[in-house]
Structures are given as structure tokens and as C-alpha cells.
Length: 416
Ligand code: NIG
Ligand code: FE
Image 1 (cartoon, rainbow, N blue to C red):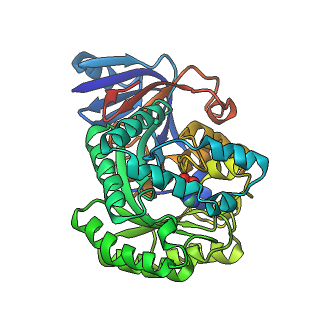
Image 2: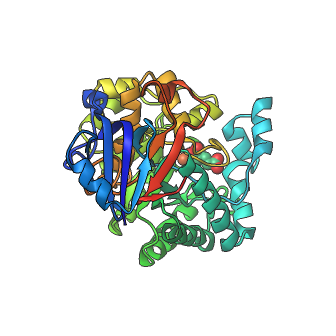
Image 3: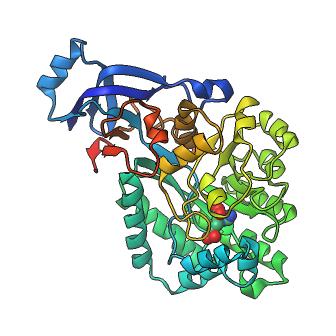
């Protein structure tokens, strides 16, 4: 299959194939070509250039499909490196409790929150979970997402954690999005382990991790290292056990309090540390000496009225920062990465170019996928979207709240 996209107002987000992520000041760079074409062979980007180039005529003659971009912008699909989008039911009742003034921790203490989802997870069939998640994947793809990380963590026992991960494995096969899976057995302490937290950690280490690894169900391992959830010591033990099975950490840290999660993440060479609302100079310094990618989740900060993570400071300190949706039923019921892009600019003071890089190439890097996606690069997956007509690229984060994606392509096929 070959595809020519012509009449592109501008391609934005070109990168050389040796660039895996962008750090600090380099995040401001966004390579572009005006009045461009893109040439796709099979699932991959094969070429691109200016409409004036002689190749254009050759591709036009050879193309099996030709798409007219109508002077829209063409950008690499969003890479959403942190979601919990396999879940059994929405939780809008808690949302009302939150409006009434209950905190996330208070809701969790009353058996709401993650435990609420975990009760429903046990009752929900694999088929239902797959059907619902496929719908959510179609929804985020229509908003421009092409690669996504999905976590387990609503099972909270061996049977149901495995069930969730098998659902994600099925999604990897059925969906045209690029999906990576993360084992998050340490998402909350199940009711029956109240007061016996250590025993639950033992169960994760001695039973869940070996079984997850045995079936090769997870690409990464995660722990919710935070106040009221898992301690530094729990996190250290779990990550240490996971690493023995080759599971690289991507962890929840400093969402509700300064948890020490960044320190443990750096110690175990985590691919990313995520949330980071309660993060200070000391942690920023530590991250500078590591390959761990700080990942900011504005959706949950917005939804829970949390302080904002110091993303601007991190970039100014030279770090590579990724932004992701945290799509989940409790603290961020949206996987709309265009909204995340706008929040990154408005609330976190990222320049539009920085925000685009944070949600594409750096998101891909935070899933270890930047060799195949996250930019417009020859040989990478043909995952991109074309915007509706816009006056400028800055309009993309500026005109927030509506879908600016006119057409979306995943692995060379039009999906919207
Ligand atoms: O990333 N922080 C922990 N986990 C999710 C919330 C999951 C839920 O409430 O269902 C988060 O915010
Ligand atoms: Fe999360």
C-alpha cells in the first residue's frame, strides 16, 4: 500500500532518526517544511518534502491512494505515556463528593477510589473490558493519539491483575494504536490487606511479578509511591523484584506528597517518574544525573485541584519533560491529548513547540518507543494527523476545547 498526502500547509515535528528525546532548550526546536507532501509505503513514512520537488510528480503517478491535506498542518500523533484506560466503570459519584470537599485520600479511605474500581473489576468480564477499552482507544485516536501506555492496577489480586494485563495484550493485537503495558499491582492496598500492607507487597513480589513475567504480560512495572498508598520501602522492594524479571520501572511519585519516589526511581533507572506535583530543587538536581524522564499529568492536577508540578523549572534545568493524560476514571477522566497540550502551555508555561515535543517525541521516549514513533522521520510508523484549516501552528494549543484533528492516520491507514 502506498499513500501520498499532498497540499500540506506545513509538516511540523520532523526529526532525524538518531534523536530519541529532546531535553531542556532543545525542546523549543520544531523542524518544519512548508507547502509539503508526505509519502507512505506500507505502515511506514518513506519520504517527505516540498510540493515543488520533482519527486512529487513521481509519487503522484505511483500512489495507490492520494489524500489532499487541504492546507492543514501535519503533525506526528500524540504519544500518551501514562494511562489507566482499561477500567470497569466510570466514577462520577466520587466526582460529586470531591466537589462537596472530600479529598482524594478521604475518598480512598472510605473504600472509594481505586478500591471501588477494583470491586467492579472482579465482576466485569474480559470481553466487556475489551469492548469498553476499544471504544476509548477509538476516542483518543480521533483526538490524535497514536501510541499509548496502559496500566493494570484495578485488579489488586493475582487473578484480576492478570485479567487486566491479558485484556491489554488483546488490545495490542486488535487496535491500530501502538500500545505498551505496565504492571501496577501496587496501585492501592486491597481492603482485605488493611493493616497487613507488607503481606500484600509480598504477594506482589512472590506471586504476581513471576506470573506476569512468565506470561510476558508487561513491558514495565509501576508503583503508586505516595502518602496513604505505598511507602518508599515497599516501592524499593517491588521495583527490585520487578527488575530481576527485566521489568523497567515507570512510577507514580509525589502526587499527594513528597514521597521519595523520584529518588527510588532514579536508583532503579526508571524510564519515567510521573505526576511530580510535590517536587523540589533537590529532586530536579537528582533527575539531571539520570536517564529518567519526568512526566507531568495536568489532567489529574486539574481534576483534583492539585498544585502544579514544576515543569517549567525542569525544562529550564535542562531536563527532558513528557506530558501525558493519566486517563482514568478517578482523577483524570479524559484522554484528550489536545487538551493536555493546551494545559501544558497555559498552566505550565510551556511554549507551543515545547508542548508539542513533550506530547510526541518525549512521550514516545517515556514508553521506549521513540525508535518507531513520536516524530515525522523516514522509517518510523506512519502515525500522524492532519488538522482542519488553522491560521497558525500556535492555534493548536490556543483554540482549546474542540477537536482540531481533521484526519488521522495510524500505520499508514486512515482511521478518521
Ligand atoms: O494516576 N495516582 C494513582 N492512580 C491514578 C488514579 C486512579 C484512580 O483514581 O482510579 C492516578 O491519578
Ligand atoms: Fe496514574
